[in-house]
Length: 173
Image (cartoon, one colour):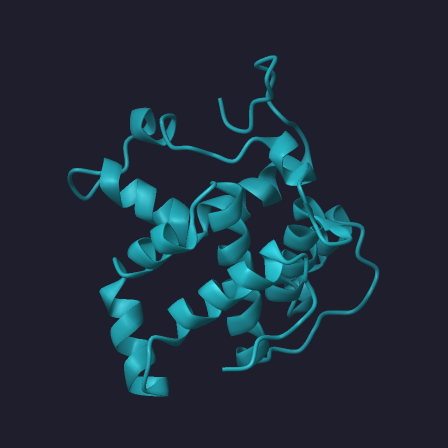
């Protein structure tokens, strides 16, 4: 059961779907999925075994916001960049027009979300460094573009910021 609570009932509605999408798109989830898959196919019995963050864990606070609020805000800012995504925005009670595409802002939003998921999964900074080191293509692309593994640097910096309760600062590298 995906997004099951302690009683075994599954979360329903739009919240369950967008939280599931955010969870599935995190680097830490990708890492775990790659450890489980033995070939090129992701069978349903493997999907059922993957560790999805339980709905109640999104109540964890990072400063003055819950994880749920951070994920909702960042998901909207990442996905709602055209009128085609208005149904998603409405599901998330968003009344504003689509946002403009800003690649640098998107890089920071994704890094903060990945940092949040590392923390929700209970990984230490050292564990996160190891997991991030298993993405050689991302590392190579970053090194070509930025001269360093910027994704890793951002995620680790945002882990520090979130641990300190800061969900608003844009990390400068």
